[in-house]
Image 1 (cartoon, helix red, strand yellow):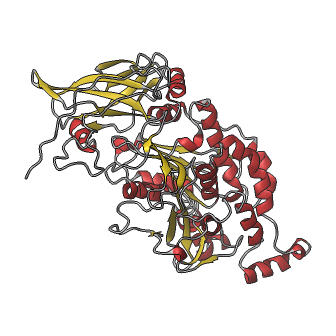
Image 2 (cartoon, helix red, strand yellow; image 1 turned 30 degrees about the vertical axis):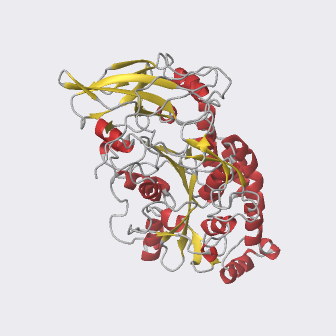
Image 3 (cartoon, one colour; image 1 turned 180 degrees about the vertical axis):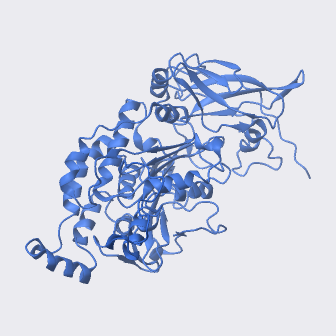
Length: 529
């Protein structure tokens, strides 16, 4: 394992030297704890309606009250079109939703600049020129605006900046030949070479397949009729990802399995839309006797069906995606969206100010789920067989920065919060912990009983407002033993010999009074010959 343990947060590593060239380096790499599952953020496309996305994210940020910043929440962010721009800004620049909301109107004005001044005088001439040039707006203005989001010269697979290392981003575009989605991930993943996917996944095999980050974003935002399609060497001609996957939550779930195959699924998936219009539900088709008007002819029917299909409609895509998720896991998936009186056009920059003034809200259940999934559980020792049951001892830890601030917010959202198992076994108050108040280290030692190592259990935060499972649950004790590699009889793959039983220590530097916790002495593992 490279680097040193980072101060103030679990499963973060500080690298002070490049392992290849031995050059000086200042980088903190964020890891997903082995017993935790990822948190995923999927952002829809929608042009200037990205203001709705930012309004919803800002509302979530305000409910968290600074306990955790928005860029710190997801382990993976997937975005289509304007969603990819918002996601890139958060992942690479650590931009808060409030700051992004403030900047978005100016960015929209810069992006949607007509390519031809004469089209304002003669609109019919603009239509002709748009067909010839394959776009109504200046793609140069789009690229100059995207440069404000991306660092100069940064490529998709370059080493991440210090604040963002370990955060994954997937940018979704599509091919013009058949509309198949194309994903630009800023990571490689574990199973990328052995999976037959419904989309094309770009994996670099040389400098020519490592495009500039702004070029990938330009492909993802090249909406047909608005911006011209984009050519990338050795990849092809690409266009807006919203043509096929305007809601990328299905792609995000598959990418989770590629990056973290042991996790199998996610702790939390947040799908964020760009607004919708509430319409009365029609149980029957109002057209009863064939094609009675011009708008009921085949071309118009096909156009309406396509625009209402899961390819283009993020709401319909989310509903269809839920059909393929088993019921117990649906509680870990949330959809954020906002009802509008009417949907503005993708390029209607005059409506951005109105969208910014909409009263956006998020459900309290989502806020509690975000806070609960900041925490995870690890066994401190192997289970002991007593009186026909297994006694399990372990610790609840925090996987995000500033655990004490997060704990304060948890106590607000979960009044009288305590830890319990899913069967109701009390594990103690959440704030009566075994951590260190000097450096902010959080650790809550717990013990519980299970009838079998294969019995599925959960540890939940429970308060007067409800309950939410912490990260990594439901799971079995046998799964925790496997994920913590306690059964690695031939040695761990990361060559760490002192990780079982795990050593617990706070973050106080040497020379300062430490709070150290006594654990059973590590025993040498038996190895077969």
